[in-house]
Image (cartoon, helix red, strand yellow):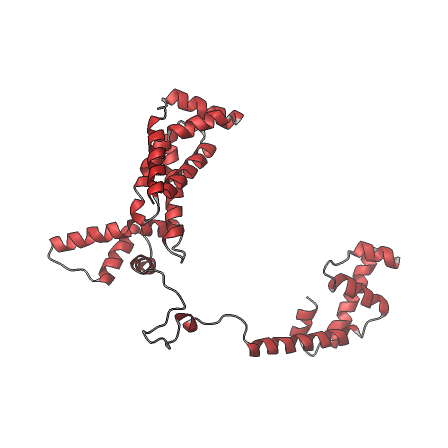
Length: 292
């Protein structure tokens, strides 16, 4: 931790010593990078605004991430901004870079807040970074009126203020209020108690379902073999090569092998399907699944 603090101070000192760019110089550097991929120009542009990135990173320390990590993410956002910046739009680079730096830092904070993904949509980000502030504001206003808001009322007010569904507010409040715990932890203090992981539904195929599926596949395979038994050798070859191979052969290649035109091969394939459908006609659904 002490080493991290030293690294942070070193980065901050270097950033504060960097040159301040006027609008004209900034524009020249941006053009040099965009048009000529001049890495020296990119380095000057990024270095000059690293103090801005560090300043923005410091605002997110309360979320528990190390300052060095936040600065690194801010620097990545700054690099993305420099790469995508269009000097022809007449906007100062610092104005454009703020959005990219903020987005990079916020994504990092949300990725590392919990082992359980917190969310990445714009509404989820807005909730994550503003929910506590908005809640505190409503609570202060209510106290000023001599009122006390229950959790449901508070959630409804936050949802309206931030512009998100009520269920999103309720879910985010649970995420921000709780902490991760092991699924192998027991549900009671008793060491013989059931672990939380035992309460999660097993979504994998169950043994009975697997046996039933295997039986169905075997029945379909038998019906397919019986249906193909109604075909002559040429029709069997066409169906096998066109429908039962991982890489089906083309009408043209089969036509060359059999000395037939592509159209004739297509006609024979259609006739073979007709025979098989007739044999399987007792069950149209089966015919459709086998001959799709």
